[in-house]
Length: 373
Image 1 (cartoon, helix red, strand yellow):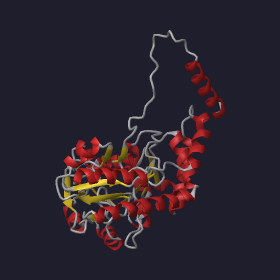
Image 2 (cartoon, one colour):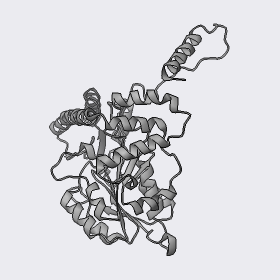
Image 3 (cartoon, helix red, strand yellow):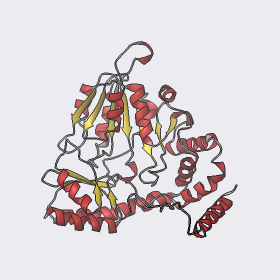
Image 4 (tube, helix red, strand yellow):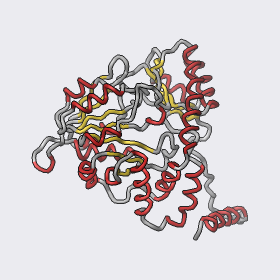
């Protein structure tokens, strides 16, 4: 059945619902969005959605829903390897970069042992940072060591290195939730000096939004560092958060060490088709950056005028010092149908706000002015 027939069948189903006898005893459910009427600025999503080419690719892939996604898996790996200047066996796909983080926690953290599990150990992270990998490492029995960010909200790399003992160091750059970066020279030196028995995972989920001259990807450093893994996602600039597709780049032996922890075919055919098409649409990244920067400039200007300080943002969200405990403000905004980020205990007076469309930021500002007065 091709996509046109699939669409026709959907139309027939809708027509049948319309002519259903009025005496039917079964109430038809009315599809509703769980977030209808809500301005959702809580999850750092891309409000503009996937590329038009991605939508078409998914439609064209309807006929392949009955097949395992091996061919598309290989096509995406080949494309990512070429874009990043690495061999195909240096790329591992994941069900979002979240799966990559989970696999790294399972592979490189846990109780320190000898033999086949040597090289496992503690997880060292910044505080605050993206929490998912902390939970995953803890489930595996690993010690989690939190190192506070510097006063400039960058990773305190010397202290993180001193705290590591084999295991894994996780660096989110730009960092979530602070939207701050760790300068490229500091990070490059850190990667060079870290002992090879300690693995470094650099999460570049927000890479496409960073435009500071003091920022750069560390993927080019993989060729010289067997202990370096770099994670990327299609959830942010490519607008595919609900589809789940991500990947990592590392040396071949490192990928071989991670792969046994992964289930087969973890990325579905629709996500693969959309990701492949997205990489062929250069406008997706260019337009995404421009729209994000325009809305961010608008809202940060308004927040500045209200007298609130912000951490300089290199991502698609901002972190505002609200000068009081943030939880009551988060709850009050919900009463205005505006959802913002959760509490990050290390910064209890800061509010994380995703950059949505300008109209959404206007709604946020209106509600924020009311509750903060």
